[in-house]
Amino acid sequence: MIRPFRKYVLKCPRCGYEVEPSPFVMRCPRCGELLDAVIDSGKVRLKWGELKGRGVWRYRDLLPELSRVITMGEGSTPLIKLRKYPNVYVKFEGANPTGSFKDRGMTVGVSLAATLSVKGVIVASTGNTAASAAAYSARAGLECVVVLPKGSVARSKLAQAVLHGARIVTVPGTFDNALEYVLDLVLGNNAVNGINYYPLNSINPWRLEGQKTTAFEIVEEVGVPDFVFVPVGNGGNIYAIWKGFRELLELGVIDKVPKMVGVQAEGAAPMVKYWRGLGEARVDNPRTVASAIRIGRPVNWFRAYRAVKYTDGLFLEVSDEEILRAQGMLGREGIGTEPAGAASLAGYLKALSEGFVDLDDKVVLIATGHALKDPDVLLQGNPQFVEISSLDELMQLISK
Ligand code: F0G
Image (tube, rainbow, N blue to C red; front, side, top):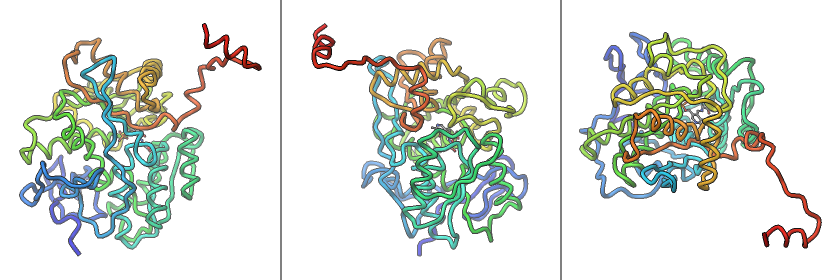
């Protein structure tokens, strides 16, 4: 068997300590920071112009080499140019098998879990990670335990976890409490050896390897944009996408990296608070209509911070009203994304009005999840229906 992490070393971004790659070590044994899975570009055979296949595994040369691959065709999502802003493209991650970008990570994470002697996988989640972990575990024939904040997961996400047979555990409080349970349980002593359930939250660097492929697809389709806007909750995805661009830079495929912009909801904006020098990346009692990013203590805060800092990007916050307006605008362009996914457009509009971006800049907005994930939000405004009871009335209506 090929060693899955042959091309990698796990490196601490804070103290520089290097660790032999392993599925089970995620934090630096010396300082506790989350480790980066660093690819040795000298060991990569990738020929950018000659990639084969589609989706996440099209980039297998830059991914762990796993003996069994659990895939449902994730990735290769549409990049849709907006009518209203012709230099703006929406990367529609709702088109993934379970309706969010999480599938890119789970195909790698669950494939890895399937090669370990574990019973199943475990995740804390605001909903999408749970849906994705449940589906991919089902495909792999593994069990799945999802730990959710009670009463604050969007209905369809919960329904997906039920459909795919996950064991659902709810805890009082927010996602931050749910994640604390999982971290304490499995990462208590910096190693999850001996635990029967493999943790696939975004602390797991191997899951994030799958998510970095978003950057590869963008580059293949439109080259390097000036800006990429990413909704930020736990901070794993913005880091993963940045990592993807950086690897292509190192391999000489591209010659610059886009500015990464992290967008948070006003009531749940710990990264914005930290970015502005207003204290640690933590808010108690996070609130927002975008339940996917209702997170007060982002576990990947340092990773997300680096992505934005090293690209001269920005963290900014948008109100729930701005998020819902952006969701509606995308809807009228034919793009259905959940509130968290629309935060990137809301952030773009804010950055535009504040002069941080220009109409001429080439921009990619990550629409992270499908609109159907959270139908309740869509129907909150009491949409008006026209009631009729005869064909005549219908004729009248459409002849106006
Ligand atoms: N958008 C959506 C639709 C999400 O589900 C999430 C995260 C994010 C954005 C933020 O990504 O955490 O990597 O910064 N959802 C996680 C979950 C927390 O449990 O489904 P991040």
